Length: 328
Image 1 (cartoon, rainbow, N blue to C red):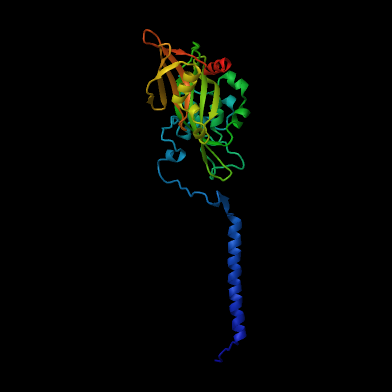
Image 2 (cartoon, rainbow, N blue to C red; image 1 turned 45 degrees about the vertical axis):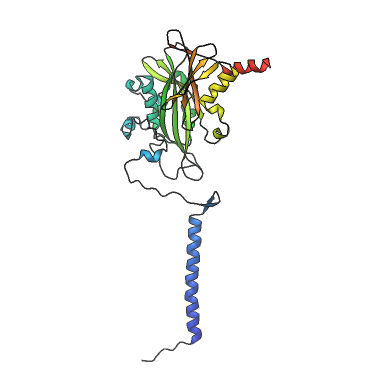
């Protein structure tokens, strides 16, 4: 056999050719992956989504940071919604036992809505189909009274849930009222919701609300709702109006000249009772509910009578302030 001799120039050309191919391959690989997964910048650094998996049985802990138990957990399977699938709100007839008491109505309403999701384009939680998607909304709409549905059509109702991907009901209490209308009752609730963002990660938000319940035949239906968004940033900088003790001292002490001596606060869970001796000698109890952001919402005022009974009253501190300003 004849030996094959390669000159040095040819060997060099082969090596350069191989290196060139490798370099081009590396460049193409880098460019491809940069275009495929562009790097986002958040707060001055590179942003990456959290890797998630579906292992584990305690799913509720992933839905919420609050340690309060979720009250709206009555329909944990899809079986409840099977018979309502693909039906219009007007075609849905709900069982009367869902509306036995005002509390049942509210808990069942938010249980229906718990895993409903109405995502919008441009904002997401970073995953695909969420919960039961829009299937629960026509069912939930039937928890509203006929008069309320007359004011709020289903299209508007559905739109009001845009970008709300999960709801937890965490607080529920009846609100004392001076009126004696037995067919209408008022309730306080606090909900914890999850929303999508432009960064494709879920965010939490908290709302408290006052829900009016009216009797429609033998059923209790929702006849009005008022939602208030909770603030987690401004409250620490604007303190006294969010604190029950300061509110009593300033609004009812300084403005109304009603407080002679305030007693130690008694708190059970999120209910704060502020007791004080009035300047005219009467005993008072003001009730506040504490929100997740630790701000206090005034709920009711009571004055003790000579028999030791707490009677519901209503004092408007704004009128006291107006009187104080006009007298100066």
